[in-house]
Image (cartoon, rainbow, N blue to C red; front, side, top):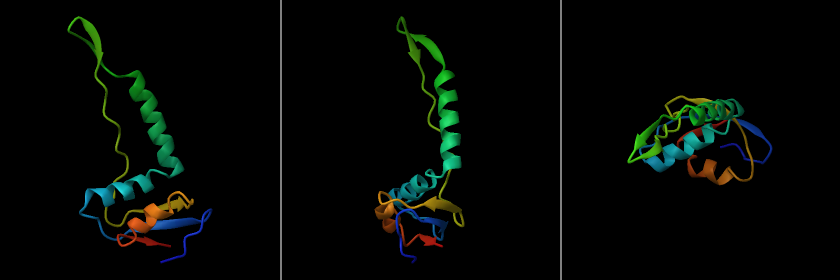
Length: 102
């Protein structure tokens, strides 16, 4: 495993898809830190906020919120660049047996 230092950009590859949801969610959370993915999520969230369907329920207007978009998935062989910060080093170490760091 490569020594993790804050400020360094590394490439992370998924070697094994974890069976436990907590580890899978951690990998997906790390994948969502990419700037391109964040731009996509922001754009989709703005649109979702404008286009939530409204209907009348019990004499009042009710907004049916559309669920959040899942644009990344921790699949076998997925690879992504990530800028390491001191805040995410514990997350990377928690899933280190499922990922490879280059």
